[in-house]
Image 1: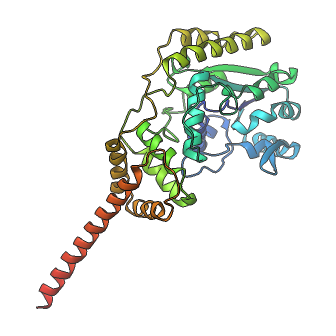
Image 2 (image 1 turned 135 degrees about the vertical axis):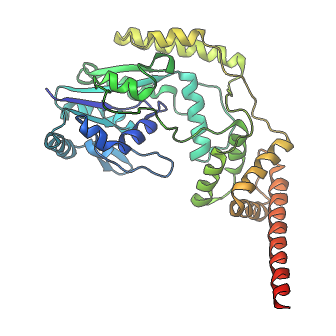
Image 3 (image 1 turned 90 degrees about the vertical axis):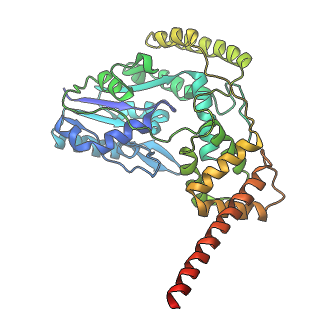
Length: 367
């Protein structure tokens, strides 16, 4: 019997990196008997994955579609492959509907992340992508509820989903093979012998602490999509400040770890799931990353602005101009105004110097 494997997240579990790899290696996968429908990927390497292969748009949401399911199954049959592999976080809210439309052998694979790591990752993405302004809040329900458990519990409440669901821990120490991709392929029962190099490229890189704080501060400005995109690229390359850190104070970490442990234990008991127990035990013993408060000195702010000026001259001038145009906007780090003004002035001075040198050389040749 042919295999159908639906990878549906959960959120913040490396799905973008997996989809980028699978999408870029479609020909290799097909030769190995794995049908992975191609899809678009944005400049950040992010996409909705194979959402359109089983669902259709309804407003701003995806909903399960019998038409798309039938079309994809026909394409899978025509491909001659033995395994249909699909990946999209957008599948998660629709697993009940998809279970009704897909053949009985379809298997759903979900990864569950450390709730505390999910909480911080969710916060970071909100600062990076949707203009979040407030400092980090160390509460499990601060950003819509950690783990995406609402959708997970909804899926587990369906016998049609639960009987075909595999929950895997999203923790490198517990991956089969080297990474998430090798673990997913092993879970799907796919032989990786002919697939070559299965190392995943980093997608949607995390900011350093300094870069995150500068982005949070600049979110107060009306930069527009184009400038935001440029700023994101340049801040992803910023080497300044801690790269390994937590925003959760030690006292809150102990409190939240207890809440997270209780939730993982409850999940296992309620649905008779033991696959997450090794992760729960490891997380109890794991030391937290070094704590860093969301504070920057004026020198640290200035250093990040100088980095931006080095790699994004036009961006620096535009931000400096917008800061001048909006003196009424309060900034989390007020010294940012002076730093951008100084950086833009230095850029203008350097440009004027180059123009003066060019003019002098031209006059010399004319004489």
